[in-house]
Amino acid sequence: MVSVIERDRILRDRKVVRTWLYVVLGFLFLIFVVGGGTRLTDSGLSITEWKPIHGVIPPIGEAEWEEEFAKYREIPQYQELNRGMSLGEFKTIFWWEWAHRLLARSVGLVLAVPLVFFWATGRLERSLKPRLIGLLLLGGLQGAVGWWMVASGLSELTSVSQYRLATHLTLACIIFVVTMSLARSLAPHSQAAAGRDVQRFAGWMVVAVLAQIYLGALVAGLDAGLTYNTWPLMDGSIIPGDLFTIQPGVLNFFENPKTVQFVHRLGAYGLLLLAVIHAFYVFHRAPHTTHYRRAVLLVALLLVQAAIGVTALVLVVPFSWAMLHHIGAIVVLGFTAAHWRGAKGALPMPNENTARR
Image 1 (tube, helix red, strand yellow):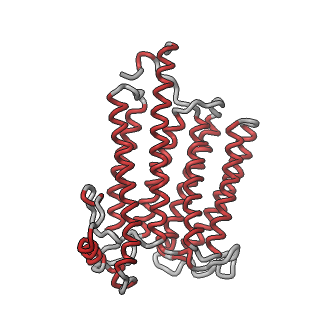
Image 2 (cartoon, helix red, strand yellow):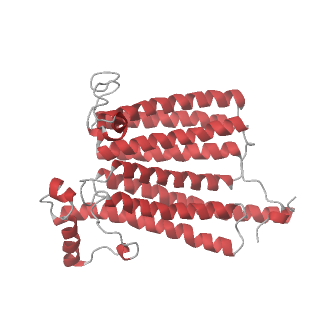
Image 3 (cartoon, rainbow, N blue to C red):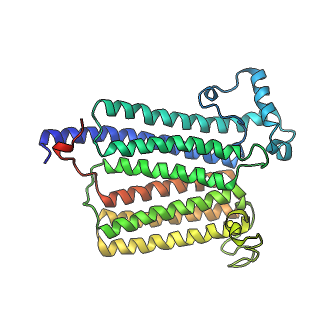
């Protein structure tokens, strides 16, 4: 068993580390918001080179701006969609992408520097170390995936590949889930851990939300929300026609805007139904607990998110409503991850012979 003095020290260190991880979550949230704006303003291809260090400094002076603009004028997006764009208009899309990349670089520092400090000063429990190293590696991988995504739109396409966009967003969401889970595992829990069945169900809810976000990224990548802007009917029917016009048929789920939007709608209905079943299940297994109240709140959040999505659709995806829908998805994901980690309970106290240092 851990002594009282050791236990108090561990709790103090957990509070510090937890606060740091919440700061990281704040940065990740900002990256999601700016990344959503970057996509919605078609700004992601405005910077045509990947300069992890030098790219921190934006163009200075008219000559450097003209040089950056000249590089953009060489890619298909400008030549086919934005020909005649002014330098002022280019600066607008440039700043969106630059801010997104700057935040991504910043979160790397916010994660890496304190990690080294906490490790060196013995504030990390042994079980946390491999998880935090894994989180740092995921962040590095995400940077590479981000450039892989941008590169897809620099030679032939007029926008980034929807496959790569969905991969980039989903990996970002996984990083968000891991960070939230680690932070919540270090928090004091007023409620005892739920049964393993409730824990597993809550975990599958996280997977279901991730899957729906992936489908939403495909919709964004294909601009599929700009057509068939009616609800609940789509193209005048509950099940619209022409869902399988591309051969082989499986490609329709990734490349046919109509099919992709329809599947995203079905995913929303399915996710909401699953959340309702989850709430009833938790009530049956753990009534009058925090786990049940969170399960009910998750249903409420999904109802709000669905309403925002429908509103954005019927208004033909204006920027403000599209951003609200994007932000809502991250809020739902973060809450679902916190609910799952809450069902699992706090990280167990280490034994003295396995403690830090």
